[in-house]
Image 1 (cartoon, one colour):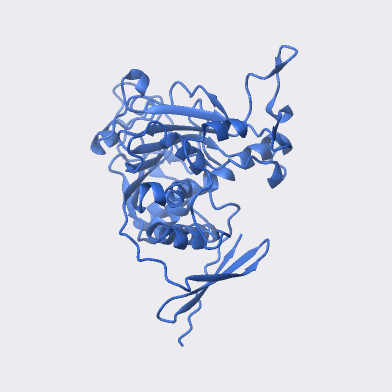
Image 2 (tube, rainbow, N blue to C red):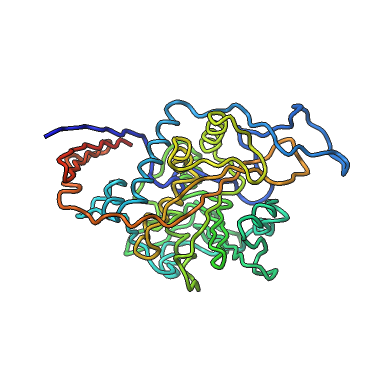
Length: 400
């Protein structure tokens, strides 16, 4: 028997990044990340109607560290293997502990009751966030992708939603109760509100989901409870917490064709690690951040893996992994990095990502002796043994 050992080791706080860090800026003015896009002449200037705006801006050289590049590249590769494989294969890739392993989410349906149970409250989305043409400035891109850019309130296809993990209407003595002082009970246990928030757009007709302003419960709880000085206890976080699950609940609502998912978008990215990954991808490919058609990276490449594994990419891969039974086998063919098509304040802009979803070939059926067993499972390492029909044995080691 020929024996090969391949070890993939990567550090991850949580496989779905939306639960660990803020991955996009909150409503209001557009925030600036360390990876900036500056005017070509490097100056700051007021702009009149006659001032020409550069078509392509320059990306700052705030690059990903070697460790981060390796971590997100390996993570993206793992996600890709899960996307093109069976549910059992995908479950093994993401360290699922069920027997046999499965990537299927435990959260199904429209999640209306589940969201209420776990103290998620619907809020009014920001007035500008749903304006894909006027605010986000992507009319050419959306036209090229055959997507409507208007909210449903203006006769368009886009439904804007926002959920927050606290009750903004809760009062005591005529004063609002801050999130840090709000508690709720599930199955007899008390839990602490985190003030997490997810704002997004669903376009069922066009087959698109847009991530706008996003911060998961773990990052929010760290800030609200501890001033970002320590991580919150895992058992105090809501069980329904991942963006991929909440997006699914909204995706299936009044949707006659849940399989019609064509594009994912992350708009106005402010996450430092993702921006560093983007900067590294552009530098490696000798490309610049520019307007549509932007710079695309096939997911068969190292750059494509890094973008898919980034804090702003993994959530969408997970969305596809978790629901193979409902949407079939889908994968991400390429990821496009793009900037807004015009900006009155051209000193800097934030990059956005477009994830192009396609049908994946039907994978071969699972074979006996696939993921044989979990050999070790502690707080740092999981090892699994995989044996194929050709007697090739691989040991996959995951550390986090």
